Image (tube, rainbow, N blue to C red; front, side, top):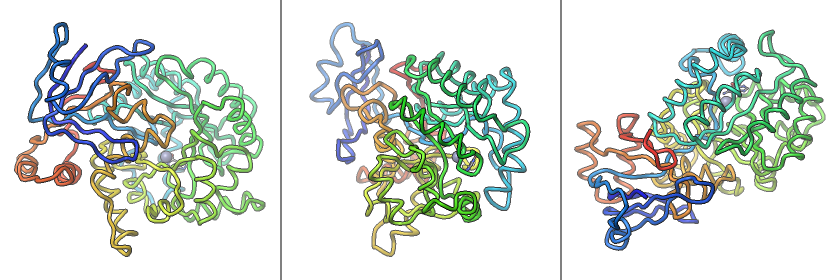
Length: 430
Ligand code: GUN
Ligand code: ZN
């Protein structure tokens, strides 16, 4: 067992922050051998357990232990696509993203990017990601193998895209579904890995491929589903042309059984009230990707409408449409986007609510509540050690913080990978 004394952040079941300025965390083996949180709380209460004989103890006072960040939507093969300028989503896909993704047919190339990608997640304090691979099964195999070797809880899947896609990334309807099922059987539930059925977005899948994906989603209910929806006006218009019978873009996914718990849809910007109610009623969740939406000029996620509808959501980087791997950058952009809609209501997103969206809230939206993204007893011991003095300005600013919100806000506005002193995966510091 291992124990740590530091400031400690976690969240209660209602999503409210719990904070001990002087706290203790005790970590040890749980079910399936995974390291879990055994106890957590004020140092005065947990000190006897943390200082018991046989416990390896570390005094980290002056630093903050917080749940590892959960990134609800990212593309590992787009690690090198960050910062590619384009007029908007569709030209960006055509000119940069599809040509680059064609390289992932090569397993050696895919493995080398997978290792770099996981290093980058770790450096930024992200301990769980729901990530796209490419349409090549080799790309999913490469990332699963790399994540397994590191003991990560990670979810990915081979992209399904059998039309409106160039040679090199376009797959074949029947074979794509056979490959998807084989990958589910090989990887889903192995160690901490999970599979996500991954139709890229409605325009690049035939009706037959979408239907096949929906049938797999019904046959494997604890497998994830991930896709994109309602990101960009040109994309929404295109979907209306391609699927004239659908009430809306989101309705295309409903009609084939791809809206359910553990289904995560990136963006969800141009939805209407019926769509939001459908998200809520089916248990599907939105992956809010503000740095991507700002970079590609896609629009602003409507937090007020999402809250009014009661739909689930959490934060995501959406690299490489997104501008950064850093959860601090994503939370900061979410704050700016949240102000857009909420100032008219006299509200803005609180720092602890932003943090929750990238940890416990994201995990809950994905069906991993109580497993990752939090540090309550029983949670898997994925956590970060944050240095509030990582830069001169942060040191100055955090020293003046008089409340938890002031401390978290200073980190959100001024923080980046320099704040992340360590990332522990299942209790282990890699
Ligand atoms: N829609 C379909 N594919 C993509 C992608 O790779 N990135 C983003 N941001 N949107 C998409
Ligand atoms: Zn995306």
